[in-house]
Length: 624
Image (tube, rainbow, N blue to C red; front, top):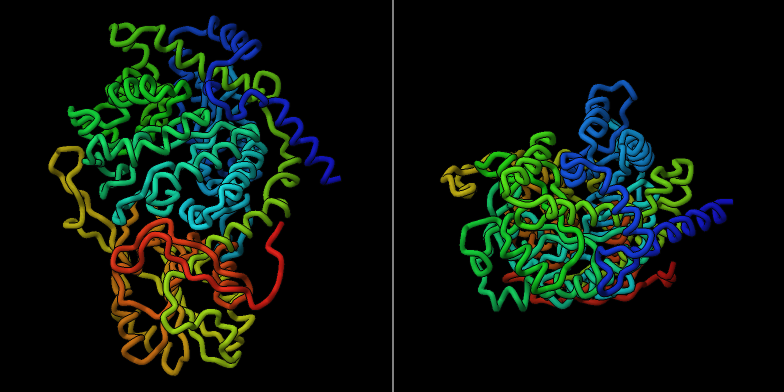
């Protein structure tokens, strides 16, 4: 019965979205029924209704009762403001499906719903952990960060990741993936992209990104390449300030712009902007999001992109700075953006679009152009006929065994052994009675840290001792950077292991044969830092001075080792998900081969392409 339901659902999605498939020259313009429906709806909309189609608020995907105050505010906003779309955020799969149906019921014109699905639908659709027991509540299929996909060098796996993302996302009522990240992460100190990128080689990023795009768009969802024209070579965090990329135009053409050019050629349906200043493209000290030279002249005219242009979140300091939301909104429209994402004040943003037309800053025809694209996409998604999802079918489509099998393969293929100076890997050569200590360095909120990893290690080492070390967060104003040209400085959060925590860990490792130090910090976030956790260097140094063999495992920050004393073993797992924790343990134990290759160089540690191969000592197929 499950197979029949799954097949029927896939046929329905395919039938509703045949025009969405990737193809050159088919980025937005609908034909036949798509255009006719779009024009018929457009003709019924007032100027303010048209403006509202472009404004998409952020909505949490959590469970809320019908009379919950947070929900009634959202429902009223959708209904009264007549919005055209939304970006849905974190929640359990069923909760998100129920929420998107409720949003659609409140809308006059069907909503186009987007979500940041960078590592699959699980990037937003996870059930979380039940507190205080830290019980994993499950969720959608989770893949490693894109850099892990780059480590596999396998475009077929990137395609499957896109395919599964689309099928699961559509089952939840999501139509547009704000993915893939096509930024080339060629700056190891980048605090906001890092492992979200496929790597530092623009051609690898392009190959993997295009495969991911095809996987998404061949299976009924819109893909969005981000963050144009490239967020990789910066040390500023655009969530906190206006970022800067100072590369020459020639370098931008050969590196940053290359993956986006390939995505446009492949027919990517959406592009998301970068809140950053690139003087080689526009000398007016304007964020690329608001630059007609970047978005219209370069992206639209020179590169030929005809699709949906989405601003990155307008509530970010890199966009808002000291300007008003009304001014930011009008700048975004004037630059050619079609979707105004996450304004701080929805009615103000809508009114600003209307005021821009009334004042002659831009024409109503300009607004019609954007709205028509969005309406065409809605018809191509089949929303004129079926705007609701079948909540009962979610469990037949999301995180089923075949999807999880592919994700497991990707997680295992991504595992990268950067260093093994003493030939310790695989650990299966060690006696099962070895005294092994596993120290997990993790934020308080990372409830999954070490759970699956240690459980798998304990299968081989029954006497395994474990300890989770939680750094304290301090704020260092000197680590901030000037914000938005105001001269103000932003305090940066600096996680640090207290000396007493380090001392306790050193005592716990007394008499051990092997100490595994695993870090769950710093893959990327709105407040991430690529520096190693404070106190971690002292911990590793103390362990090695005491004669312990230390294995360093990073489940997040690929550049971790550059700030730490060299350890005999360094392994990168690219994600803290249970599947990646399992894959890391299996690689170290010889239960799965290790084949990953670094898609970045790690300064003073390893060059691009490094990856020691290890065969499995326990033969088993990795084919789904």
